[in-house]
Each structure stands twice: as structure tokens, then as C-alpha cells.
Image (cartoon, rainbow, N blue to C red; front, side):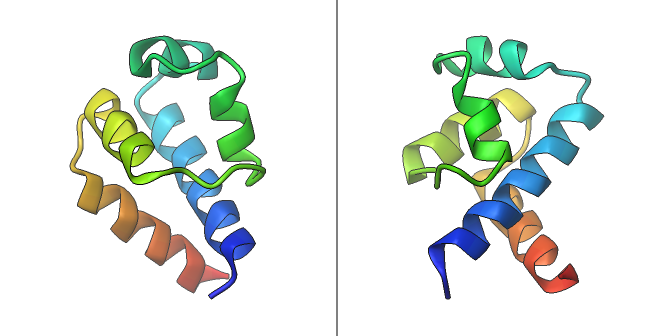
Length: 79
């Protein structure tokens, strides 16, 4: 499995979930204690999140890390 394919699928999923939660990229970054530009890099598939990042994002988004991973797999299977 190519890293870039996973990063792009994660980014698409993250953007969709973030918007559903009504958060801007800057709000997400602030709540997760990331640099304000990091969510944009993730959403564009330019960065691959670490496990720690997945846990931080899950907490801010109010879901389990497993849900984020499963949604990423679903996004990969759609394409």
C-alpha cells in the first residue's frame, strides 16, 4: 500500500469530518494543539499523520481513533 494513497484518503476523510463538525482548519489546529497550517497539509495529502496525531484528531472530533482509521479505509475503497 502506497503511503501517498493513504495520506490522500486520510485527508479527504479528515476534511469531510471536520466540515461535518463545523470546524475550520484553524479551529481544529488550535484544539489539537497543532501549528495552524498542519490540518491543511493533512487534508491535501502532503503529510501522513502519526499515530499520536490520529489520537489527537479523534479526541477533538469526538470519535475514536479506530473510527478515523475505518473511515480512511472506506475512503480508499471508494476510489
